[in-house]
Image (cartoon, rainbow, N blue to C red):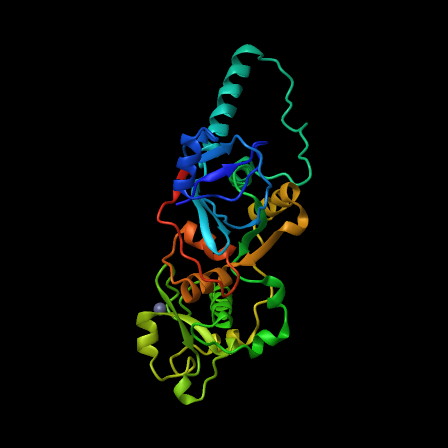
Length: 328
Ligand SMILES: [Zn+2]
């Protein structure tokens, strides 16, 4: 556990140990700012030698995970629950207004189409989520010196996907490329079993021409199958199994890229406005999953994903036991 420290002027310094904080507080060399997360402010001048922390943001539509790494150590992890009542509240407000106007200003001119949406307009429900995400990072920046902020914007790199060498990528389990290819195949086959069209079931990467019969590990020979279909297909090719169209579809590369959601691109934009364009970088879900599983060996959670996002590709850190959870 770490105690967050502000300088005499209120600028964030490097976090310290609870022991040292206790000594300072007792000697009245520091005062308490906040209990959660525990933050103190020094009452004496120091030379600020801060090393900027690396921050990872796992944006979602329900929860946001945030983690900060300083000196190869995770110093802060938080999970924020986003509001999901905005749509409902606005509908209610609209109904109240409509009724009130019908009661009180009955001959009021219709004015439903004299509004204009500003550039970059987001629906209120998404706007609230973007604001809350940025707010959470800014809050962290109030007690930690924030350096690079990394945001995950999608499952995989859509620009790289246009690259022709995707067709030559080989699937290797446990490799970064393997994670990329897995996401690629998941997107291409829309997370559906190619044979029985089952969704929302565990899906396996399936070789259309089996490995045992010379099928390659490339994307053009991979599809998705549920466990049952994969078993039944066995050593047959897709055509022999009764699905010649699967084979044809596999040869066509995924063209239209899964676009970056408007929520995520707004979060990146707003973070760039706050921390500077060069400080904010983006990453992709396949990298996060690779780091979380292969390098850090952590179970799935928003804050663990955030830790993986903040890490360098082969950096090993331990997550904190304590995660701060809050609603907006
Ligand atoms: Zn199936």
